[in-house]
Amino acid sequence: MLTRTDDAVAGLPGVPPPPGRPADPAAGTPAPAPADGLASRPGEVGVVPPRPEDSGPAPGGPTGPPPAAPAPPDPAAAPDAAPAPSPDDAGPGAAAVAAARSVLGTPYRWGGTSPDTGFDCSGLTSWAWAQAGVTLPRTADAQTVGRPVGREELRPGDLVVWDGHVALVSGPDTMIEAGDPVQENPVRTDNTGMTFLGFWRPTG
Image (cartoon, rainbow, N blue to C red; front, side):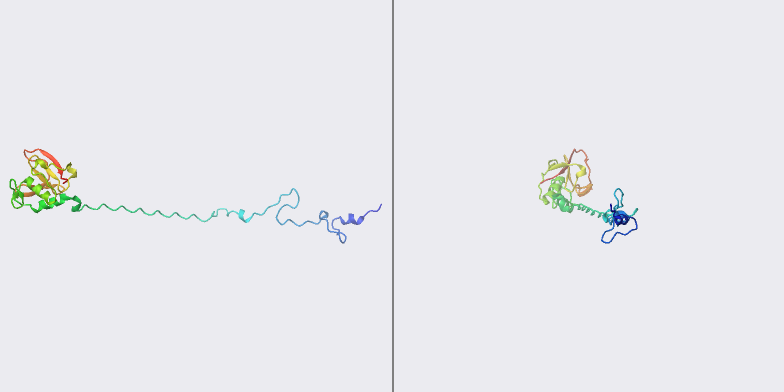
């Protein structure tokens, strides 16, 4: 029986294959390494190069741009201060006080109701309020009209009333009354021999 020795010889390491026959990779010629880094033989673990998107930052390096600092809140607008009350804000009471102050020094007269004749106490307060457009009863104890107010609520024009005398509040602690003459004195609640009937605010 004939034997093809050229096939056997060609399979030996270092012996080139005969013309026209491709090299046998199993005969010792190494196959080129895979371009993707995978193992060239079954069962051999290859190293897969990391993809660019899988690359993390260098150890200890920043993880990205720092977050922008939050914008500071707009300062709240300071509330406007409450305006100081003007004389007009006090209503007709301010006008009544202005009228009473204009006749300071006028002589006292029993039953008097005008600057020309003189004033008694209720004549002064009724005249002063009449200049502000408000009509009051003629006698002192009848001038408990409008609404009662506490001493801490007093404002110009309020009445200080007893059962036989009346005065007109002119400031924080002052009042105008028909003494002899018409004068401005500290606010009080006592008057000799008389009962205090309170502070009253005419309302028209």
